Amino acid sequence: MILILGSGLAGLSCSYHLGHEECLILEKNSYAFGHVHSTQRDGYTWDEGPHVCFTKSEYVWELFAESVGGQFEEFEAKTTNYYRGHWIDHPAQSNLYQIPEPLRSQCLNSFLESRPVEGETTKKVTNYQEWLEQAFGPVFAETFPAAYTRKYWTCDPRKMGIDWVGGRVFEPKVEDVLAGMRGPLGRQTHYINRIRYPKSGGYQSFAAKLREGANISFGAEIVRIDLQNRKLWTADGRSFSWTRLINTLPLPDFISLCVGLPSQAYEATRELLCSQLLLINIEANHPTLRCENWMYVYDEDLYSTRINCTEKLSPRNAPVGTTGVQVEVYGSRLKPFAMDPNTIAMAVEREVKKMGLVEPFATTSLHTVYVPSANVVFTKETASALECIWATLEPFGLVREKEDCSPLTDWKQIQSLGNERWSLLMAGRFGQWKYFWTDDCVLRGRSLVGAR
Ligand SMILES: Cc1cc2nc3c(=O)[nH]c(=O)nc-3n(C[C@H](O)[C@H](O)[C@H](O)COP(=O)(O)OP(=O)(O)OC[C@H]3O[C@@H](n4cnc5c(N)ncnc54)[C@H](O)[C@@H]3O)c2cc1C
Image 1 (cartoon, rainbow, N blue to C red):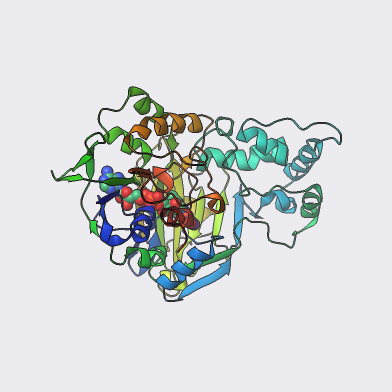
Image 2 (cartoon, protein in one colour):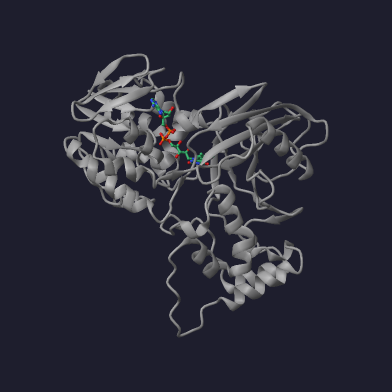
């Protein structure tokens, strides 16, 4: 039997592609879908943080479309930035005209001064801070993306590597920045442009096809794993054996549950950093006040980091004439939450009122959701920690794969693993410790059997 730990998208996709009849999924919650679980409350639909589909994979587009019977919204991402009372179109680096003076000119001058001189070799960057300074100039880098990194990734950009950046951050050319000093650039530069979201039921509706027929045991919290004897135990005292095991639990949790591993594996997990998310969901009795899908907040004295309005994803996500403002606040072991969730929520409510997203006395409900594992943070130590952990797991049937220490996976390069080569496998954002979106989690399951 194939035992799958966790019923998030990665677990569901592995089960779907291997055949639900071959698999048993163990899930600690009373519901499936993990991070893409959507909840209904007071007529609002809330996701665990804003989720939209922006995949490049036709396979995933089709699978998600079939799941909702073709009933999805499709739109272009509209994003904006908030900085000390100013709204700046995204990406700010090519919309300098909206940045107040003298900062605007300082950003431009520092950008121009840091352009590589023709004929000179460009300095090799070794961390994310250096990458940002090279791409944008030190003033813009420090004021915007470095400040945002400390809030969103909870980490000094000097501690982060650059192998996760890919095409996700827009690197403007000199002419883009100069044009952005005068006015709007007039073309889309966000890495996400075409977006889909289910018309109803929240983002989890896209996973309906993967979930259908899955064999899931709910309330099965795994508390101990014996890889040697292929046996594990759940908190309610049940035990399970496997011929093949797939883990989608956060890697540090998985390793800490395994008994009898060499000590270096437990030590290596201390190098793995993941952020925690506190979501503040605010229901207010007036229509949406801004047109953007989401907003980035750079002020480091504000808790709010990213903001979206649930009815901007699908109008059915909120009662007519109301708004559901969702604010993300991040913490981690490097940046523990300074106060209890309710105090943070009240501070955030004051912030969104000041930003003009919620009117005074309009809040009808305010609640928080805590997400213990949100974003895998790629520090300079991540790859060597993964190398150590994978090497430790090889004797238990883990097969080393291309790019298994890298944050990104190029699915075009990935060959099917085949059915017989592995007896222990990692899947998903937290199991593989990757910069994975929902489409990657689906494609991980598909990669086990190849295209079909
Ligand atoms: C704020 C935020 C916004 C995001 N936005 C987007 C987006 O716009 N588009 C996009 O494509 N992706 C987005 N993502 C990424 C996406 O959510 C993840 O890549 C994906 O959902 C991860 O799925 P998974 O199956 O790997 O992990 P999970 O969903 O975490 O699944 C793991 C499962 O294991 C279970 N589990 C954990 N511990 C135990 C245990 N001890 N015993 C039993 N079960 C256990 C959990 O309950 C969970 O169900 C976002 C992520 C976040 C945090």
